[in-house]
Image (cartoon, rainbow, N blue to C red):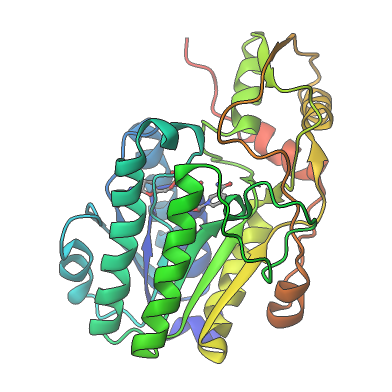
Length: 330
Ligand SMILES: NC(=O)c1ccc[n+]([C@@H]2O[C@H](COP(=O)([O-])OP(=O)(O)OC[C@H]3O[C@@H](n4cnc5c(N)ncnc54)[C@H](O)[C@@H]3O)[C@@H](O)[C@H]2O)c1
């Protein structure tokens, strides 16, 4: 049990999602009381989110902390405040969002509501409820096609290339303003492509595994030379916990949480094929609008200030995700 977290009552938004369900489990295992909030958005099958919730409830049954859940759409006025008030939270970790780059191009207003409006609601309510800290999920996509790699938090990151990325950068700017006006400690975590068991089904690794398992062809967008800094879920969760602990020491801070280990798309497909023991048929298509050419995290700030390190090798993480993959339905 973690003495510091034992005293904490933490609202985790997006708790039915991929990262949120892992985080809620990690928090209850360390003795925190968690209120999960999520609207079970149909962006992907809500049955997957219910299964994530079941896993969290089972974990909480045998943990020193507790988990309760309220369904709420956080972009609705006062929804966060109403849902969280009775819980008397000491802190908030806000992960709820419409995620995904490509769908945001079809629905920029929906992304602005779910991401920017909801974040504004969360910040205002967290201050009114006297929370000692707020941690927000941001994204590597805020860097756009930055020409300098690895991506550093010192970069101005003012040229996002998708509505999703623009909403995430807007949330960071709201966090800065909020801290300036209220003094409430807020941090923003720029996650770099997170993978592992329960990964969102729209993300490349989950999609490739599903198709390879079913013996169906996979689509490679571009010539395979694009690259991503894939970060295993357990490493991300350790980073989020460290950021939660340290946020009050920094006032308002942005941290990259990545692995500092970019992998080319064609190398990723080879690595998945090795883990699956099957060679996929690959179809080629052009690059998709909104997709960046590469991501690569400079993690020196997180290492120095949070003691963060991504230690899980790609092959090991892929093997864990493959072993936990949902079985194809008949
Ligand atoms: N997975 C990644 O690789 C990655 C990378 C960078 C940033 N992020 C960010 O991390 C966070 C978690 O991502 P994830 O991959 O777990 O996504 P996810 O879609 O699995 O989880 C997000 C959850 O938020 C909920 N949600 C959406 N709109 C909501 C609303 N209006 N009110 C309440 N709940 C709402 C969804 O139902 C979902 O369960 C997101 O903010 C995402 O933008 C993720």
